Image (cartoon, rainbow, N blue to C red; front, side):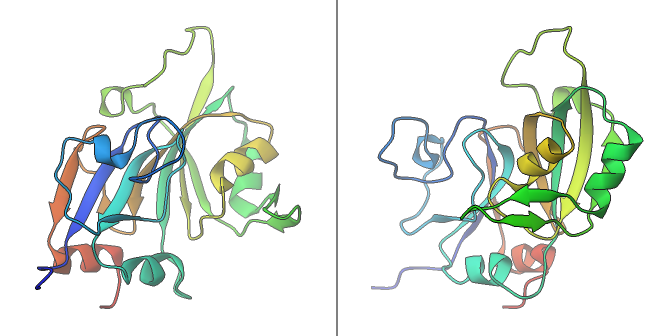
Length: 200
């Protein structure tokens, strides 16, 4: 039986949804999205339940290794809202590297990365939670070439800020575009590989 052509999807994962189709725990899953995914569709990498934004799905089992297990680094960019105003010293620390705890209990110093303060995104990324008006915050645009477990959250915590929102907006040249939370866009294979800077 011919399984048909390989397919590729871009999803704006909503806050509170798991990055998987099956889970032993209650909660929203990818299968709850209003889309008829073909058999064999799986997420390429993950966003944790409380993170939002760009999630890639495909029926091509090779893409995860090409994108996240390759020796060639791939840029991932996040919009991050942190509690309180961030000063120049904290920004410098994030840009040059901070020490975080990793799985297994060891310590890891993050490599230099791109960090800048940006204006709040407003209606482009409506907040899934209502934060009190008196809370001050800073929005950052952070670009990394690696993605250890909860790395961005641990990085901002290392400079004494709490992560309020974490939205992945792009991987290399593939971005969310105008997708709203819960929306899906299918991509042609050539475009998908070209924008992710992957070799077939």
